[in-house]
Length: 232
Image 1 (tube, helix red, strand yellow):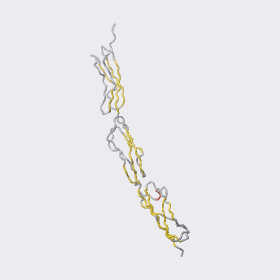
Image 2 (cartoon, one colour):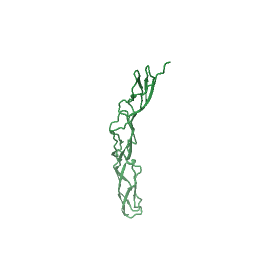
Image 3 (cartoon, one colour):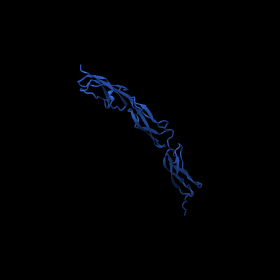
Image 4 (cartoon, one colour):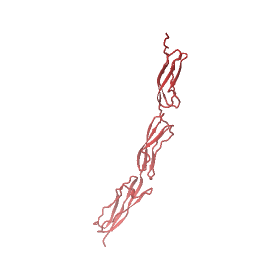
């Protein structure tokens, strides 16, 4: 009768955790293999972040039983460093404004932006969505893209009428439109009014422009004078 080959004792195969640094990571058995026993590994020597099952294949040779041991090799992602995302201030000029990260992304990392590339005046919160790829942690950075309104002056035009006549049609002039824009760029055009009416006495009255709305302009108004001439 031939006795069965004994098991190999005193051997362990333990899991280990590492942090990604670009170099291969290895697991290895601990303990001393008897003479004639060999070992090979499957799934070992990993570089990229992840969780891997490594197999230690022990060949018992002539005198020992073969063994298969498994352990987990974990490589953690690392944060991306050296990246900044700063806000910026502009004045409306009809062109598109954008923010961008500063620094160089490591290989395999990419960036996309949310709520970027704005033309209209306002304060916009822009998000830089950094996908770390295989080996780096994802990041989300925010910054403010501010586009200030540009000044626009609306000036009423002087007007005159004879006492007892109907009020004339009032007009205004604009100063400050940019990039070829005109009155049509206003979402609401100005009202022009006066306290005078067709029954008012001869004299001078204030013509008042008001009520214009423009997303990209900071509006100021200049009044004018309505002269009511007395009847001859």
